[in-house]
Length: 253
Length: 322
Image 1: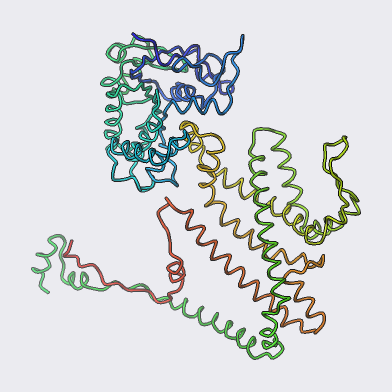
Image 2 (image 1 turned 45 degrees about the vertical axis):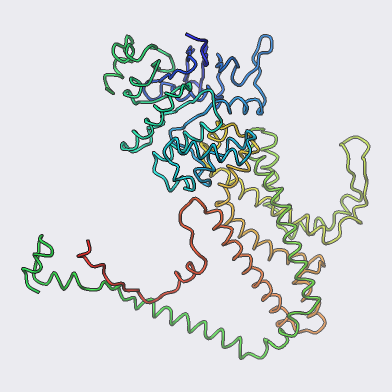
């Protein structure tokens, strides 16, 4: 195994009296796909959001590509980075949301340009790359469409293209198919499978067990903020050792 | 038409007479109440128009004679100029106040809240008089750091002319309202938009100007249009501190010739023209910010849509085509 791209150590997050993440340790190897499973409220989304510092951890740290996310080390403590430095780190990490969160006042292509323009890419070059990406997610003909004129599945494919536009090292997917009508789940999962083939590192929070079995290199199971099970998909899905994981999987399979 | 024929065309539940029903035109309900109310209202309108035309004391000839007088046009220009200047400065201040109000910094947020509370509470006319009297409160104004020797000192009486007092007073007043309108618009934008923009690596300033503010505009524009129209008319209060705006210009004239009504009509017509222009501009700005929202209604279509009293009948689509 090569050096992991993502190292999560002792990650803890509280919302008031609730401990949402409780000392999570996780490695994600470069170029691999990790799927995070668990019942709702188990902290899956919070884990993902902490990886690009949309949530600040209360303890522990996340390291991506050898850099601690959101902090720099100062002797005995970690000091939060400037907005500018955090912005730079985030531009190396793509994120896809459950509710798509496309910018409704911008067309599909303009959505994909936004991150590139912020990163200083020339407009002409950004448009070329934007069209390539739209073509890759099968929406070459929709570049002038506004989000409201597209189906949920199409919007989520644009959102994936938007996240890819800044050439991230790591892609985070937060339940990307949970807000979709059933007949549109397949097209989004298809795009994600193709993406996994390209060798980009992915962390996927999902309830799609089939996707986990087929695409994941590693499946981890969260319960009440703790990582209770981790391993190859065949092991975790076929013979979970933890009681909660067994109950959850027998319910969803 | 025979039952057989009907069965051939529509095999289910065919009955004698179905074909006449299928061929019938669909016509909207008659609305006699609409006609009666329209006639009554038109009678009232006709009465008003008749008195406007026939009552000689309106002196429409005088209205015409004074309508384009240079002194009135000067007043008009001042009204427009003052409105534009106050609009720009109060919205710049309003954006700052709204962002402060939403800031996580408790000092900024509280200062903004107190500002808005104060300037929304004080009537603009009172504020205007106050600024006009600034010299008696602070004979000199200095620029510098508190408790240290000031960099610059100015005699207040020289600084605060009526016009500056009007500009400052109206700006402070309108900014408080603008801040609340802008804050409401900003809050209406979903949090997911900011998160998505952050995740793409956009800086805070970029997120505000390119993602959040454009989406807040549809909520900001209609209320701002109201505020702007209120401001345009509100500038007429500067006449009390002898600033020669549109209203004060006509007052100066009728103070000499006593033709009060026709000169007030001159000002009225000018205000009507200005507000009509502003409302039209507002319509097009709203339409611009509606992009991505589907329905974009045309100006004339919107007007026509309001008019018809007669229900429109349309021929039924031929069922057999289906």
